[in-house]
Every structure is written in structure tokens, then in C-alpha cells.
Image (tube, rainbow, N blue to C red; front, side, top):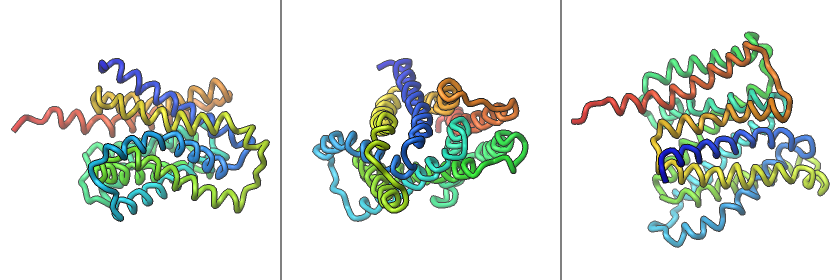
Length: 296
């Protein structure tokens, strides 16, 4: 596979994830947020399970109690991120959600500072300030205009950052990314099902009405896009991968405008642009700096 083909695959994965924001929003016209989470991740678990069995045959190390604990913690972080994002979509726009969620690229190195005691690259601090300024502009210059959904989505980005940090640690320890994916999907589905069965009404007609969105997000966003990312990143550079994957926010906002008729003020678009720039500089600048270091 050429680098150009790999980058096109990453762009396709980002487009799938961007479409997932629209699917998540429209599904709640028929079904509650926690039922949607439970069903989408149940589908995702089943979609990944055959690949987990193939991976298990080639596994060199057995799963230990420590590995199982890491799987569970990663799953709880994924559930927290999915829950805050999905509930947040009830009171924020798809455009806001797609850009604010992307802040996880800023939060990941900050999480590493707190939990792993790793000193961040200097670009993290101006990147974080740009992100805060972007959210301020996204509110139209009035913080009171930020909805509860916007704030929940900021929390979602923090949970995504925790999940990414835990997932990296877990895969390094186990060498089994597909087993981790299936386990965290199953944990998320079970947690969401417990809440949904307690607090949200459900009917077969509601599930049927939200069926296309559940299948799209469960199979394509959680299954196909993940596989495309894993394959494509073997044939391109991390910096180029970051650029193409960050376009998820652009696809989400574009599809929201096309399919849902969402619009915002010029100030809001400036905020989106600033958030996107913050994501890119945090991803790209450390890589460029490493490449310029002289060989020892």
C-alpha cells in the first residue's frame, strides 16, 4: 500500500466518524441516549468478536488479572466518554459536539502529566489556551451561551483522553488491541444497559426506528473505521495520520450543515477554526521537533 492510499483510507475513516455524530443525534428522536449506547456497543462487540478469536490464536502471552483490570478500566472510561457525548447531543449541535470532542488531542498529553508524570511538549500550553479561546468563540463570545451539552462534551473529551491513555498502556502490556476493543465495547454496553433499563422506556418500534443509526455507528464507526485506522497507520507517518484523522470534526460539521441544516455565526466558525488549529499543532509540532533533532 502506498502512502497516498493509506492517507485516503484515514480520510475515509474520519468521514465515517464524522457521519457518526449525525447518526448519534438523529437516533435520539426515537430512542433514549443510554439505550442507543447499549445497542450500538453491543453491535460493535459482535462485529469485532470474530477478529478477537483470530487474534487469540496468535497471542503469545496469556491474559493476567492485571490485564483484565486494565481492560475494565478502559471500558469504564469509554462508557463515561460515550455517555457524556450522547447525553450532550441532546442540548448541543452536531457541529459543536464534533469540534469540542476533538479536544481529546489536547487533553491526552495533559492526562499524561497528571497520571504518568510525563513532561509535556511546550506546545501543549499554547494549544490548550487556543482550545479555551475556541470554545469561548464557539459560544459567540458569551460563556452563558454555552449549553449543558457543550459542557458535557468537554467532559467527554477528557474521558476520551483518559481512555486513549489507558488503551495505549493496555495494548503495550498485552499486545492484543482487538481483545481490548471487544472488552471495552462490552463493558460500555453493559453499563449503558443497566442505566437504560432502569430509567429509559423502550419499545421494539423505537429500536426499529433507530436501527439504521445503531447499525451504522456500531458496525462502521466502531468496527470498520477502527480497522481502517490500524491498517493505514502502518503505511504513513504519524503527522500525516493526525492531519487526516483530525478532519473528523470537519466532516461532522459539514454533514450536520448538509443533512440537518445546522448553521452558526461567523464568531462560531472562527471558534471551530481555532479548535481545529489547536488540535493540529498539538499533534504535529512535537513530531516535527523530533524529526529535526540531530542524530547522536
